[in-house]
Length: 218
Image 1 (cartoon, one colour):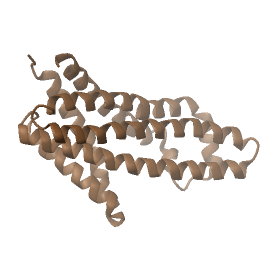
Image 2 (tube, helix red, strand yellow):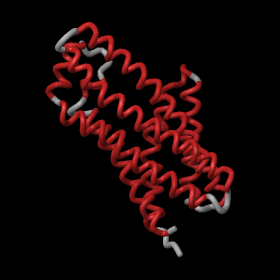
Image 3 (cartoon, helix red, strand yellow):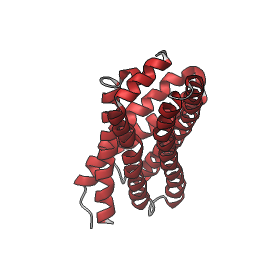
Image 4 (cartoon, one colour):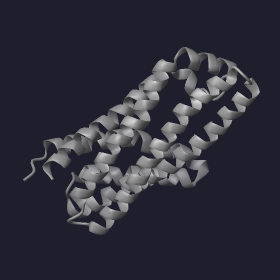
């Protein structure tokens, strides 16, 4: 148990770091990526000129995060299984599916971007259509995995709250961000509320990671 819990703690901190790193790049170097009104030709020029940093951004946000999340899901399942086996199993299913969606979205984005750049040299109109298609697909996946993430964090927090295997304040916070994210997703007019989940998850991962690394196991 000890080794997996420590690994889960480390992965929780790294997962949080990948989100902070990704947000930092979007707010600085990669600002044009987040601009939905950017001209397609300007977009291609920017992506072509910044292929390396964009690849690192995507790799961190999707693959490193996905790997860390897989370990964390298993570590939390192990921690919760004795006290709340049913909730532990259900939450872990949502958590694993979430990681699958993260990897899927990452593969589509990374290889899709390369395809757009290659197609642009042959047919600009088709390249723009391909980008719109990929954006629609990845947005749908991102909304789906956000819902799965809300369910996972919410259920984990409920199970941990019942058995007090995680700090009470962290459990309450996890329940709040899980509910807020679900409300924002299922009610389009309240979509902005779902952003609480994104920022809240960073804090939740940090808290979980610190606790799991400081906790002594037998």
